[in-house]
Length: 65
Image (cartoon, rainbow, N blue to C red; front, side):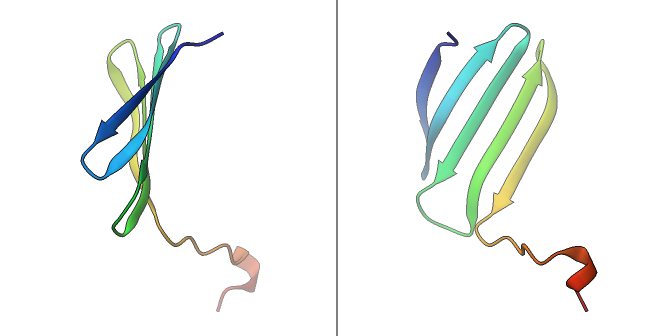
């Protein structure tokens, strides 16, 4: 079992978990234009640190235009 810590950062709430050399942080927004923030680190080095928009266009690429 991987221990998970509940965290809050400003208008965001989420979880932080460490599994081996990896640390995962997922924050969900309670307000604003960003829906979530995802951060993945390995031995202190950031592999991913990105915002996810509140609205995602799920249109298949071949149907765009």
